[in-house]
Length: 211
Image (cartoon, rainbow, N blue to C red; front, side, top):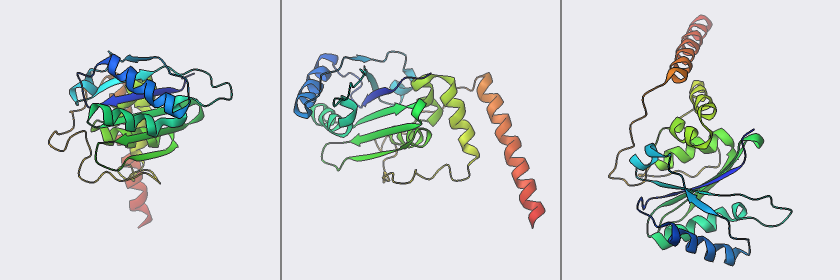
């Protein structure tokens, strides 16, 4: 079963881990929560190509006490302020089908959303300027990526989830940078895509019969 995860995305791809720990230490002290351990996620090449450095915050059982993920917005604002660029935070609890995300940039209002796991991951991918399955693979591998592909059968898949703030003019990290191209599909992706094509064909056939 997938464990809850808290991942930070820094636009500063050369970001210093010691500086990040210092920022989180100050933010956690202000929020009166214990300082978590944090490390770079090295197996995140597609995110690096898109202009993001990825860090994971190690979560601990809360024991009924406040924990860093309860203060996601303030943590992300602190990172954006200290590193002087965009920052995104994503908390996911796949077992509970829940997600929460926050986007912050110096000089701009922060944006946040929470809701169904898949919806939050898809909207966060839009903020990051990557394909949703790329983010899904980073979180827990192929299972989430396949679920995100299957969600494309929903004809409203391009609309933000309910309650999500729009991201006018900047779907990715920087307006001047286009989103990274999707990775080459593997065998699982091709299987899912074939199923999606068949599902669309059956839906079109059904709709034509109703006319």
